[in-house]
Image (cartoon, rainbow, N blue to C red):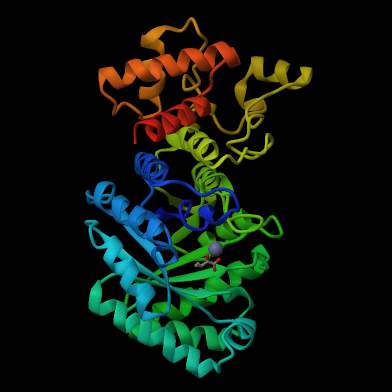
Length: 392
Ligand code: KIV
Ligand code: ZN
């Protein structure tokens, strides 16, 4: 039987931790709006205790994007009261808010980072969950650096925080150390033990890409019982990044007979989302990146082109239309006219401006088109961003 895999997007939190990728509130709202169009189940909107700006951005996302039932809005807290309060006070405006708490579980984290004993850390985690539960019913607990933790201590932590009320248990491979077979076995073992608990919790994973295995580890976890995956658009995130949402989703979609699973993702919005995130954050997507790279669906060798003309599936395992590649890219020039430019903005979900605002934007467009000759979607994002900076 096919099961649903919940998709938790952390582009605005783990992804935004990339140096130089900071977004302003306007950009964060646009990304969150696009993530909702992509139909992610959960949006991690930020780390509200880190700055007033981040707190306000999470609050605005909770109010404006989290105002419907189809998405859960969350944000990250360390296991301290002030962080949990900041998360609560920013996500509480959403219809479905969730508090996300993180605390280390490996010996390295417990001893070196916190300088405490395992029992002390366990108590801190349990108290944090108990406190969060007085504020909201939904609480996720992330056992940071779980893939390098002593298994029995990791399990003791999981058991204790579930008893304290955690509703989602997230198993992070924080430093991208795990290997797919090993990570799959870890998830299998946890899943087996969770079945024996009375409380029903969602089992989640969060994989980093330090050894280039974030997607493989996430998929191994799905095969072994994980029900929720944490990802980012274009795989951006700390250091080598996180599991890439588009890779995990398209693997499940393309090989559903193996994973016996599906996601809610509207795959046709993948390219739009990828380009928006890349444009706003100023992070180019590697040309040969799976699914969203410029060459992912380009065929250059004569033998391949010949095969494709005979039958597309000779060298194509995904129809590019499925990820929104067809008809989305309108290459605009100075001669494109108002209608084409307006249509291009609408295709990107940017149609919120008045007629007089559009006239001003069109003047900016002509200036850019004269200078650049060809205007792409990512230029349109930047243009809108500059326009709003000007009128603010
Ligand atoms: O990598 C990590 O462990 C995290 C946690 C907050 C889930 O980002
Ligand atoms: Zn992370």
